[in-house]
Structure formats: C-alpha cells, structure tokens
Amino acid sequence: MKWFAAAFLTLALAACDTAGTETEAAAAGQDDTPRQLTVFSGGTIYTGLDDPKTVDSVIVENGRIVGTAPPLSEDWSEDEVTLVDLGGAVMYPGFTDAHAHLIGIGQRELIFSLEGTASIAELVSRVETELKDKAPGEVLFGSGWIETGWPEGRMPSAADLDAVSPDNPVILMRADGHALVANTAALKLADIYDIGGNPQGGRVERGEGMKATGIVIDNSMYPVLQLVPPATEEQEREAYKIGAQVYVSRGWTGMHNMNVDRYGAPIMKSLDEEGLMPLRLYNAYDENADDIARERSYETDTIRNRAMKLFVDGALGSRGALLIEPYSDRPDTSGVEILDLYTLPVLMQKAEKEGVQLAIHAIGDLANRRILDAYEELGYGPDLRWRIEHAQVLASEDIARVGELGLIASMQPSHAIGDLKFAPARLGMDRLGGAYAWKSLIDSGAIVAGGSDAPVEVGSPLIEFYAAVARKDLEGNSGEGWHPEEALSREEALKLFTSNAAYAAFMEDELGTIEAGKLADFTVFDRDLLTVPEAEILDAQPVMTVVQGEIVWRAGD
Image 1 (tube, rainbow, N blue to C red):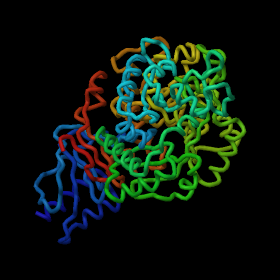
Image 2: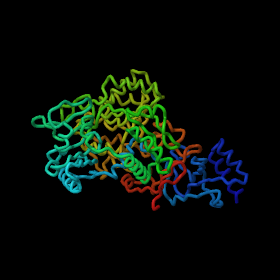
Image 3: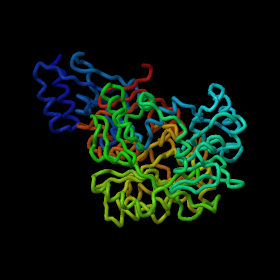
Image 4: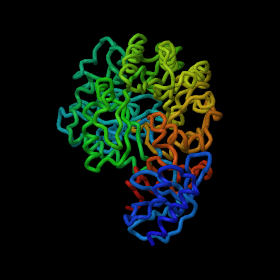
C-alpha cells in the first residue's frame, strides 16, 4: 500500500509538471517513513492560473502545496494520506481582505452596535433602551450607524439624543469611523460645545450661536473619544480573537489589517502562538508604531509586520474627503486635510529610507493627486509597492498615473454600491466618472487589491465579489451615475482578493494561486462564483477555510 501511494503521487506530480524538489521528493518516497499528505478533491478547484484553470485535486504537505493532479485513486492507507472530500463544493485560492480592521470587527460583536439602524427615530429608541442599564454619568459608546437611506434625510444630532440621555454622555461612531454624533453632555465634557477652532484635519459642525450640533469629524473627535474608558488588554485580546473567528467563518483566509496600534502587535503574536489566531495577517501600523514595521518585530509564520498607515483626508459620507472643487451639496467645504501638503513627502522619504511600505488613505480627488504628485516628484517606482487605500475618487487625468507610477490601488467594491446612493449629491455627475473606477485602473495597468474596510462594511467576501462584478446594490438596483462599465469580469474580481492581494503584501511567490510550492490557503464555497447567475453570488455559503494546510473552519463543525 505504501509503495502504491508513493508511486501514484510520483505519477500525479509529474503529470502536473511540478518539476523540481517537490517531484524529486515524491519520487524518492521509497523509505518506510510515511509522508503526511493531505489531498483535497471531490469538487471544482480553481487555481487562479490561466493554465490549468482548474484541477481535480491538490496535494498538501507541511502547509504547502506539493502538487496538483488529475483524479486521484482513494486506495491509500490512512497513515500516509488524509483525504478531504469537497463534496461537490468549489475551492479557490484563499480569499484575502486587503483592507480591514480586525480589532474593530471583533469589537462590533462586543459593544453597542448600531449596524442596520434604519432611521434617526430607531437610533434614538435604541439609545434609550441601552441607557436603562447605565448608571447616571456612565458613558454610552456605540458604533455602526450610517444615515444613507434614512427617511429623515440627514445625520443625527445632539438634539435628537438629548431628550433620552439627560444624565449620560452618549457617543456614537458613524460606520466609516471618520465621524461621530455626541449628545450635549458629551460635547460639554469634551469642551467643544461652545465656539472654538478646528484642529488640523478635523471639523466640529456648528449651528445657531456657533454651538456644536453633535457631528464631529476626523481629528476633532479625539477630545470626545477621550471620554470613553479605554479597553483593557483582555478586552482587546477577546476582540482580536472573535474578529479572526468571524472572518474565517466567512471564507477569508487572510487580512491586510489596517491602523494597528503598538499594543495590538504582542496580542496578535501571543494569540497565534496559542493557536487562537486562525487568520493570516499582514499588518499596517499607525504612525506612532512605525518602529514595529521598520524592525519587523512580533512576526510569526502567519503574521507579517512591514507596513504603516497614513491618512491624507477623511471620508466622502461625512464630507471629509479632500476634493479639488467644493462639495456639490455643501459648496462651503472641500473636505478635510488630515496630512498637509508639506508633511506627506517628508514621511514618504522617511519610510523609503527605512524600508517600510506605506498604505496611504486617500478618498477625494485632491488627496489622491497629492499622493501621485509627491510620489512622482520623489522619483519612486513600483519596487516600493506603496498603496493608496481606497483611491475612491480620481480626476480622470489621474487614473492612468496610478499604474504608470507603480502605485497599488487598494479598493473596496462594497463602498461603491453603498456610496453611490449619496455620491451623486456629494460630487455631482461629472466627477462620478473617476469614482470607484476599478476597471479603468486595471485597464490602465494598475494593480487593484480588493478589500472590504470592515467593520465599516459587513466584511463578506461574497458581497465584495458581487459588488465588483455587478456594480449594483444588494437588491440588484443601480442608478444614474453608477457607471456599469466599471464592473469587472469574474476572473478580474477573483484576482482582487487572491493574486493581487498577495502582490500588495509582497507575497505573490507564497500566495494567490494554487500551484506547487505555494502556501496551502484555500477558500471553499458551495457554488461556482465564476459561473452562477449574478444574483446567486449572494446566496453562496462558505463551506471550508484552509490556512497553511489546516482546516481552520468548516461548516457544521
């Protein structure tokens, strides 16, 4: 039996042209030490390659793919081969979310969540209910609201909250993390209720008598957030753990984890060493923890730390995105400048000298242009693999520059199908031609990596894939200015979350396709995302998630 298994594997590996050490090792399998092989078969397996596009089986040893093969015999002894039957499901290279916030995903499961709130009236009602268990003076903190589609047609205000919260400061973060609404008690405690200046990169919305209305944007949020008791190390650890469990249960094998603070690095490393971090992580640290990215400290076999996150502007929904021309629905503002024109190239030069990859947040067309201009003026090229996070709105003349300069556009398809319900009002029709322009960027030579920005969005690989290929909302609707020509083919969409995400993390030799020598990260869904009718993509269900050859999640377990 052992002889048969070794001989068959030799034949199978050779049939797939896995020349080199893998084939030689299989051919040499004539000693009495059984190889610990895992064979995935029994379904459709997409490799992510042009040839072969699909294979029947994948052979894994020690966390790596040692070969792919035509149909394999099941006549193996159990001590040599573990057979994993896909049961007719469909396997892909592991899906990586190229932009998400792991601790926020976990915290969303643990704190007062306003996700799905459908109106200001409902938000106020939920706050009133939540406050029943709070002592007078205790801060209520929640997150996840977004006013898109609300019948009131506006953001909530302090006045909305005050009637149900006379004795407690209330602070509610908008889903994008770039704005919050606070009641008057919180605004006064933060000392921003009365007239005052705005800090660099922030704005407090003011109304009659220059009193704060309750909406606080970007850097102006800091004094308000100081009122929220900091999370303990154990609470952060729990959030990271839960966030990772949620993500592998959705089919993600990896995440490019954004805005990590220095306290998160040892927590993630500890969880991984204890077997409690099933997700592969590529971390981008905030500016105050750039030494971790520079020194590549706290790394493990599934955690890499080499990037730093910067912010040039805010978000479009809260009118913090930095625009060349004023907002169409608020001509008194062009957005928020978080990182000024002169500091950006200084930080770029520092990062280049230290070998740190930059992941730079830019949503507005002016913010994106400033990155392109600074990168070009400094003479940098594609070898740095620096990333523009979001790249949401580009002037038409700047689209081709992204690929020409070798910058990576790290984009989130679900932003388009949500934002395009209000983006026409914010931008006007003319500027929408360069908004969420995935197809134009790819066609002009740019690498586009796909993510979700969870917990801003749900964080589902199926929603992101659907949004990329359909460019319609979850009910199948679209509207004027949605530019359906920017939708991607199924194959292009798959690359966003596999090979392109791998390239954006310097891991294209390790991840992104199913072929010999690469790490065995696989995502398995119950149907074929490349062939099912468009609407059925959202009906798909994850079946299995495999990271480094280990099944870290399986439906029904």
